[in-house]
Amino acid sequence: MTSSTVDARKARRGAAAQRAGETLLRLGMRMYRLEVETLESVSVPLSVRQFRILDRVDRQITSMTQLAALARRQLPTISRSVDSLVRQGLLLRQPSTTDRRVTALELTPEGKEILDEARRALAQLATWVGEVFDLDLDATQLAATVDRLYAATQGQLHPERGATGRDAR
Image (cartoon, rainbow, N blue to C red; front, side, top):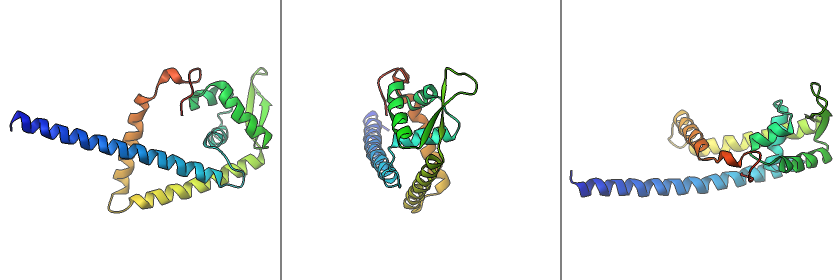
């Protein structure tokens, strides 16, 4: 094989990889939009951030600092979202049982109901997405491929934009 043949193959692979990457980015934006619309359709419309806060509080992540770190957001950003959820009657702020200086978050019964409704709606969306991909693809292989891509994106996130830096998605 000549050097020019090898170079041409590399160029074609590079162009195909770029095209695939562009398509995946567009798909990611579309999937995010579907998630937004799904969460907006529940009986108490939620933003993605609000859903994630409720979900994490339900999973016993009840500290504002922990929530901010996980969301890679500044504390005031999370605080505004929590304030909104408290005003809607979906979350409560309670003094921590271990440290009186700390406030812990807790789902209200209505918050748990809305969270469960949102989870069911997202599960229906996830099922639909899985069915769309079930053309002639092995679902296990597809899931493994998507998991690898998801894990690889972790290295592209900017750690300096964490809970104390500029807001990231």
